[in-house]
Image (cartoon, rainbow, N blue to C red; front, side):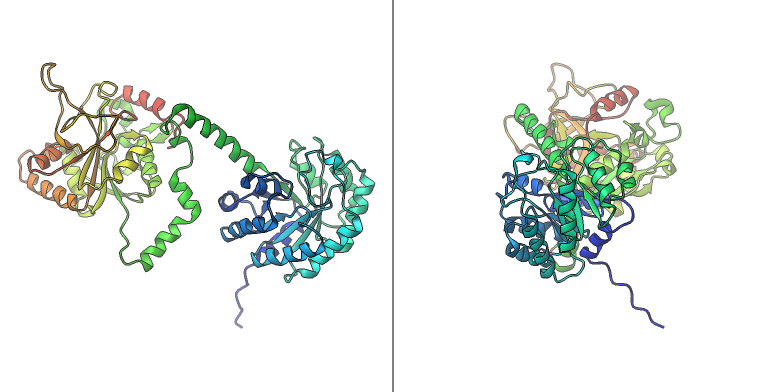
Length: 551
């Protein structure tokens, strides 16, 4: 016998299951599409479209100053971006029974799973602002509003939750129970009992007297320190965490705004906040990229990263006895993992690592590994040549021991030059024992200018004497290859293969060879904000460098 596959639950059915669950369930406030998606990704099974939060994100008071059509428009974005049900905090239903009927129809059209309405007079004021001075609606009239909503719904599973404000307005438990029972008979699918006290005494007394006649919903904003086991024991059905997403967003935005204003820049904030790529991800940019690949014939491939990580790192002593330098942890995270994460945050997902020493110990996801089997007797250029077949027309080559601020990679991959290198003009702050790769350029770094057209002249490993021309900076170990630059790079590698010292050559030798062949290599100046890890002293500096930054 053939069985048809079970139809997926509708959002209204999912909400009804939450409300009628035998166990305690939780939903989280959201106020726009991106916060709704974050709530779903966090694992919540439902969303509370809070009236306070929705009005706040519009910048108006929670006094019905945002129209119900504006609220419904926002709900459409929230519903489109999520698969979990939304329960709208519908205030008083935005008017009388007729407004309620139209509201229910419009919510169903947008696959909003339910609405909670409160028994106060329209226009309402937030319950925590002088709630005892706010008049309650006539109970019979409110029952008519509930019945009108139920009669208007086309989906039997659409839920109407009746919110009892008697305790907020200063009435006693008896009045709250009387109203709740009337609302249940009018057709309410659940009762939300609200309290402004810092202890749950009123809620627990109500729950005891209510005796589970219908599902009970609570909002423990004021009595937040109560253990949830108390709610389970009281047979509460649904807990709403009602406004914490908007409050946390406000707190973070205030700190960010102050820091940007005080510092007059973004360097100190960029690595502490969500990346632009994370925003793109939450917006569904990956789906759009997939669609472009299918439908847009001129779609351009993504940037590739090629990381050279074959070296042991002898100056790190015992730290590299069983692993290559690139796997040494900084702040508990291996250098290579940090590099890969930096690339992925710039939407660079095609990442090839040329390994060598202890290659089997490299345990980093999201990469392709090529092993230079002659790593012990060859240098950097030979490692790069091992990956020749993976070269693309859009590529970044970098050393595997780098730490840098995110903007450096972002700015480099935006370069349109065939070949570009990053040069740090803050030489004094970055010179220490080890190879120095000093860069001589067509112009020194004029920090008052932006995007100045500077080209590389040569890279040297030793500082000149004081009377000689001083270098303009230090090459940090990153090359941007684009378009024709790929052919320049391949031609140079193939030409150098014929030299007797090929196996001893480093990347600066390759760069200098291309310069001698009249290739134009553009310089992108930075001023600090990076380091490489070659020694134990570097490792100590690396811990300070990464403190407070993202990985």
